[in-house]
Amino acid sequence: MTYLFLDTSSSTLILSLLKDDKEIDKIILENSKEHSIYAVSKLSEILNRNKLEPKDIDRIFVTVGPGSFTGIRIGVTIAKTYAYCLNKKITPISSLKMKILEYSGYDSYVSIIKDKRDLVYLGIYDKDYNTVFEGLISNSILQEKLNELSNYKLVESENDDVDRKNLNVLKVIEYYKNQKDINPHEVNPIYLKEVI
Image (cartoon, rainbow, N blue to C red; front, side, top):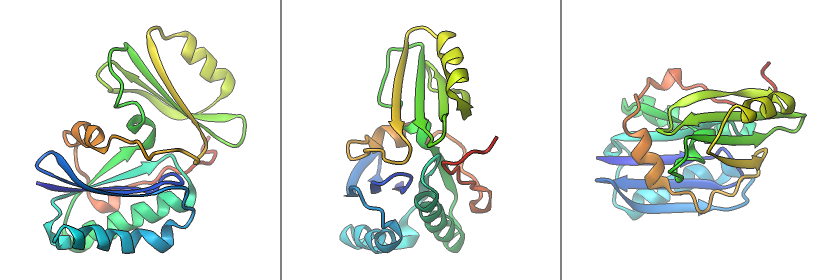
């Protein structure tokens, strides 16, 4: 099986190819606010470099957010178009959950992306990374939720300025490959904005 991983949810653009449970190639553009300029050409570059045609990709994994409005829109649009044209399914990836998958040994995992207002996107996951809670909440509710937990790992970042250059894509795919694929039309982006 050949997988394509696409993350444009932060200022770092990541494209990765995986084959038979091994990462075979990766392109990372750090601190790029111009994903719209580079994403499609870099996708073509990584496929060509590995002598692959678009039809050779068996499954598409795309980060759906929360993340920057423009960044998420670009990645999700590319993945949806690709999947629709080639009759492929998409596996959406939470940028909150993605950040905690490299850790182990805790009873709970907490992932936070700070919003520009006094709000945070919060993900709480159990020891097996199952979602307990994901949503946009105030800082006061965040503290209440954290007080209910013990033996947890906290990973936090400031809005969409997330450093993903050290992201372990293989670990993310190992988790998400057991998740259900969905029809491209059902992929819904989550933008860094107030939704409640």
